[in-house]
Image (cartoon, rainbow, N blue to C red; front, side, top):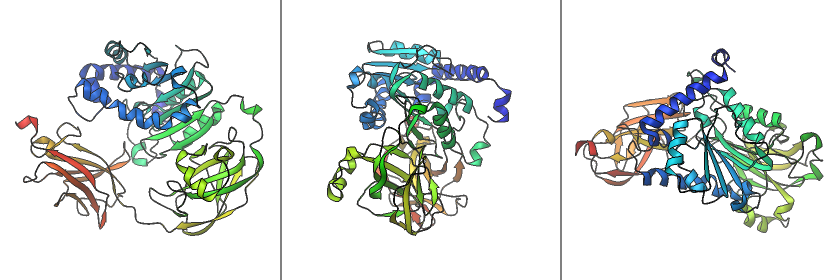
Length: 471
């Protein structure tokens, strides 16, 4: 807890969160929840929740449900707003219990979604879930919520109490902002640019709770995803973590096991190991390490083998997936290229025999476009004329040397010099502002960013004819 937090109590933060989010709910709730367009119809707003549920829930359904029928399960949604995702969750799960710190958000959500009989809405204190008993929910889910909480202690309190109401064997999936860059640490936190909850914070909280840490992805970014399982037995009753001596049966790049050379930097600097001999219910991303040439690193995922690796298993190994544990690891920063001895080590100090892996020399980091907005109202709709013809582009892969002299924007065949290039601490990315040329034609064009001689992958940009403000 920093000095500012020490001077303020949890109740102070709760008061601020309730006040600010009630105000936002009354001003323009849809915009503050879904900042893609200032004026959104109900169809646009609620429709935008469907792909989010597909991406964040349906893609993980086997893990979240543990093989059970979702219609028999009870889910807790933390931070429901107007129910943008709630309305889609009701079609998947038997009971959906949705909470928000804002009483005004809850009032509007309850009114808007009254036709969904299995949806239930609650205003919470902002620090706990005293409305619910222990061991009550099969699944707990939260997205785009904790990134707006101004205190790490408040975030920890929410996670801890959400774990309390989770049933043994239940799964909790949540997102936090885990940016640890000094530039963001220096920004005063409020109910919009919230506090960091870092990878170290998450791992420590999981240990304190005795939780089974399945995965943690996106560390040091605004969108860090954590998945926990509530153990069936207390940690003190945990059985041995290995059946026999662990053995690395298969390895490869995390997106494709048949690729054996692993980059040491960039988006593909992830190694996957398929290991036999482990008790999958006991090993997790906190109590198991991977050693690369003797250097210990904590994994980002420890759990069941993904369905996407079934083909590789069939081609390269006769071991059934049920007998293997998948371990994903980001290659630690600064690891040199060349041959590397890799082994898995348990907290009991038992280790697998090493395997030799080829690591590629670090490559230049290519820029990557995350998001494009307009300057007019911050929405994602782009026009050929008017205030919304000014682009705001959020980009990864730049560094402190990036400026208007060495960054260019390519729109179709037009090369644009940006008006502004700078780091955005709250998002952990760089922002580029550029004006579309006056003679740009409407239609879909390719958008890319140059940083020196490195060009980002192209992103489609749909340019409409004219901004409604000037019609």
